[in-house]
Length: 174
Image 1 (tube, one colour):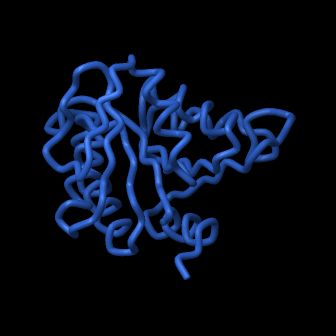
Image 2: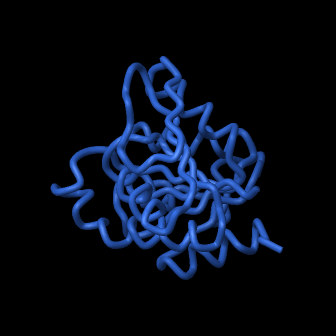
């Protein structure tokens, strides 16, 4: 079972900045589900809800790793209520995935990108989506590392096809 973590903006799906990413997130969820990947995310609103909805429409599996007493969005296959705060629950999510895809995001996403890197999990920055996803691209060492230890490569993709190609190269399905 190949597991993909999708991180990014939280917030209402009908307002910026999430609204501008709606089609991209829905399609990412659909395409990951069609390929048989299990999707992990924070289980809430924003990018998480849209990716979950896309996967749900294709009968994919989405595991939401939730903070506090949050019940999660209605598209989750499994909602894991951790009882933890937002940052701590993120580390549970990261420990359970093979690759992380980042779409936009604020400080929680930045923490998740750094956490994934520290754990040696490859990160795909989906460029042009704003937030910390685009900011991190500006500080990469040799265009692909977050520090001089060069723990794991951080990839950059500008399209959905590029993102999926990177994932498939890292986690062949056959």
